[in-house]
Length: 141
Image (tube, rainbow, N blue to C red; front, side, top):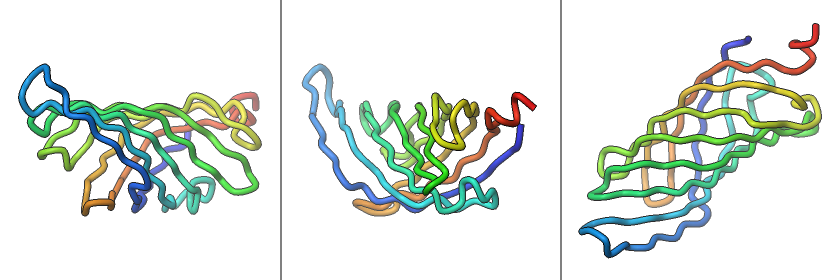
C-alpha cells in the first residue's frame, strides 16, 4: 500500500452551534469546510476536499467526527469518515480517517491514516494528514 502525505488550507463555509444545558460550557456544533489538497502523490494533489464535522465540546475540549469527500477531477472521487480528539480550547483536532468508497479510478479504493487540523482564524483551517491507500486495480494485480 502506498504511503501518502498531504495538507490543505480550508475555509469554514457553514457553521452552526447549539449551547447545551446539561452542564456548564457544553456546546454541540456542525460545520462544513472546503479546501484544496496539496500532496506529492499526483492522485491526491489538487483534489478538492469538503468535510462535514460534528463537534461536541465541554470547556473547549471534546470530540469531533464526520464525513469527507475528495474530488479528484475527472479521475473520480473517494469519500470516508473521520474522528478525532479536540484540544486547545477547540483549536486543534487530531485523529484518524478511513476511506469508505470511491468511484471512477477510485472505485474499490481502501485506505486509512491520521490527521491534524488547527483553526487559524474565525473561518480558516490548516490541516496535515498521512496514511496508506490501495487502488482496486492494484489489489487485483
